Image (cartoon, rainbow over the protein chains, first blue to last red):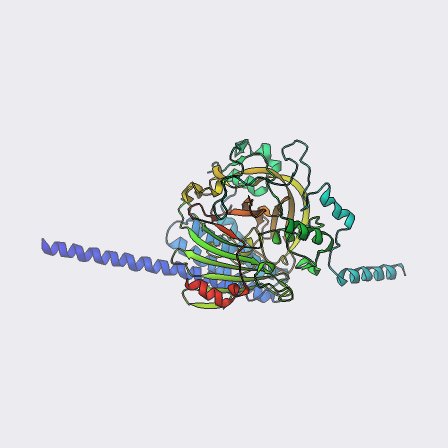
Amino acid sequence: MASRKIIMIIGGVLLNSNAISSSTELETERQRAQLNFERCQVIQSQDNVFDSYAFAYSTGDCFLRAAQEIMAYVEENGSPDLNSNNDILTALQYADSWFRLAEVRNEVGAEDRLRETQAYIAYYAKPQYTVR
Amino acid sequence: MKHKINLRTAILVLVLIHAGGLFAKVSPDEAARLDKDLTPVGAERAGNQSGSIPAWTGGLKDTPASFEPGKPYPDAFPEDKVLFTIDQNNLDEYASKLSEGQKAMLRKYSSYNMPVFETRRSAGYTDEILGMIDQNVVNAELQIGGNGLLDFVGAFPFPIPQNGLEVLWNHIQRNKGGSFTRKYIHATPTEGGKFTPVTMFEEYADRYALHDFKDNQDGNLMFYFKQAVVAPSRLAGNVLLVHETVDQVKEPRRGWIYNAGQRRVRRAPQVSHDSPATASDGLMTSDNFDMFNGAPDHYDWKLVGKQELYIPYNAYRLDSKSLKYEDIVLAGHINNDYARYELHRVWKVEATIKDGTRNIYSKRTFYFDEDSWGIVVADFYDGRGALWRTAEAHTKYFYDLQAVFPTVEVHYDLDSGRYIVSGLANELRAKFTFDNEFETKDFTPAALRRAGRR
């Protein structure tokens, strides 16, 4: 009886530690995605004169990848919540604005990336004017 | 030959324009309207035809008897009752006097409403401000490109504006009382309405309001601003310092951040335009703060004209100390049962992103209150041209200061369904203090470090 109790306690501890480690992992994954988004913000602040359209493309790409990382996290770890949806949309809107700028000067690939970004926005933006 | 003359004339006109400011000043005859059909700040003195907007008669004359300086502001109109409420069921009836964002919120949420009260043109002005306007109306000009001001003093540079940029500058340079400190919370509720209040403490001083102000020093500087996060503990100690320049194209805004974790002060050039605002969960950009701030250089500003609009105004009820944050911050939107809407005349200005530049908002529509020049309602459109976000500034008249100023600001994201509400102080002892004796040393990077360690 006593040994059964001990096994249950050990089992419980192991289960909890698994849960803790997996939640820490998830948290880290999500945090990493958020940090990448913040890194893109720092990058975008380095060019306020908009004289390089290649820079515009790469900054747009940075934001799109940050959005995709959050999307992947959401896909793998349950249903999307408003917070994640907001983070995805915000990153996508930044990507959209940079790809638009790159597209003006026909930067290679910008048009395709802009189209891809807009498809994501259309998907993640909830239909407007829905009645709760 | 004819072509040559036209070309010469065109060049001459361009040279003349570039020799001075971009736009013409107002003639003395035109300026005299401020004593006749216009109010001293350039609003229409008369009421509207239906009588739903009254004439301006000098603003709120009597300070509520129970008011004590430094204490919360009692409602200046406690006897006023709701005239009618706009909601999903009757919004079509009032659609011509609502912004696109207001209509979108009403359509999106059946629980969203706008209680409408009698219009009270409470705004009044100090003699000092009126003196500044008298000078500005015949002297002030926009710099080339519209990114700065020439021959301007204090507040309200363009009481009789000729274009959208001049209207915007009236908002940027409206009367904020010279200097103030403010403590408040902001909240970014989850889908279910849960939130962690983020407590902020701000210090603001116009350049000319500093105790050690020198007219011949730092002429391109407009004001100083310090914003510290006080709570929760995971964010506390982070402080932002801004030296706001007038012409931000000539000299960008000077920004520093003190990071409590690193215990370091570093330059923060990213605190401008569309970078995310402090602790806002990405729901606000830096230039969303105060509805719009900073350089107008990324947009073309078109003055659409004037119209009547239901706007948040005289928001004393929303500031009531009898309310808890939970009473106001709901899922999806704030509790407008405590808001007060009134019909006022507003200036409508559309800002459209310039070619060769970028911003997450491709277009913004702003509505400026005619009596205070503050932006009270704004709509924000994304790169596709779809309405994305909408914002309202719930303003009130600070009767001791004689200035209309936002007390609560709300930014709604129509796509994600989230929002940020800023400026709540219902559970704090005091919100604003005015007439602080600030000096230049209070707004240095060293002061930033001290503020972070408090």
